[in-house]
Length: 391
Ligand SMILES: Cc1ncc(COP(=O)(O)O)c(C=O)c1O
Image 1 (cartoon, helix red, strand yellow):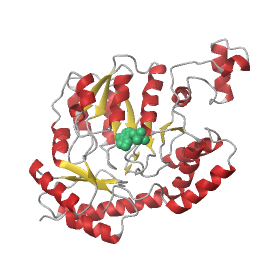
Image 2: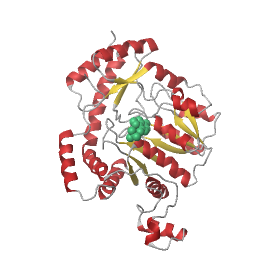
Image 3: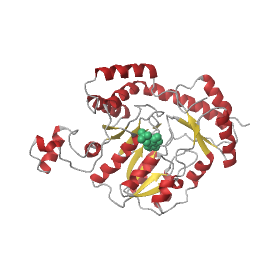
Image 4: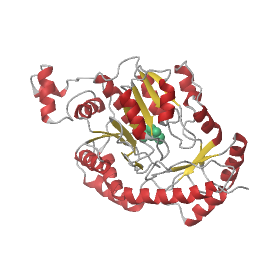
């Protein structure tokens, strides 16, 4: 059996031991110093000014859109583009927060929305923002997408929950837009069990994300920002300030356990991504030799940080055959994320307008994935390679 993942953590045994010790010694386990320490470390590793830690990647997505609304950069009824191939909680907050979701098709060869796909959407739709997903360890031509957004006055934000560590010649995925989100759920590149974050270089957005993360209050802001808010709203005492709520928020806070685990996992992240890329290249070579399958294009990427290897078959019938082959050999597989999002029941319920999305539809019908992680043994890799052969 080759499961989607084998361990909860990178360096599982050591991490669990350290975690037990941390919990036994910690005085406070609600959000505090460890979260702040992790935020600083992750921002540095990612090459961003700010990192705001959340209790999940989905929470980071929700908070990011709410924060942009709180700042008046997005408003009710605005059209927000999203990659048609993505996760449910990338799209749901667009609808939950009163905006209109517009799918941007993807290219089955890169699994991602490319600038050509965005240009196609812009022929008929005026977007206020594009919440692109860097899907499955890969990414689109983000430099060109950024230019296109700039030219059309579109706010670019990235859901980088699936591509932490992937690099283009123009920089790391997650560093192309105003802000980007990450997930630290089990089976992603690093895990804090549940967890996620948002990165940005924008001071105002950083501040608003912290207000949005915790009830709409100012307690997690630096002193100068608190003073500014309190003066603006005539809050006269510390007593009053404790329960003053400045803007729309939720409770999406992580715990100190999240921060602690994040710090341990960061130590192993780079080596871990290297192994994932090595596995990816090994499996990719096998796909290139099989005329039933479509090889993925990664020539525009300088580093592929892949946690789920996607197989794209040439036809639906071939996919059924390969699904049987993989499942029969005990390899755990999944559909290519949510496929064509328009086919999901929640989407059909809340969004009337449908687009003809050939790329996402093709992946919905002809793709599947299996896990790619550092604990795959040589014999696991041999088994996966044999499943990828034409039979
Ligand atoms: C693209 C994308 N966005 C958001 C999420 C949500 O992350 P989480 O499970 O941490 O809420 C996921 C989860 O896998 C994802 O793949």
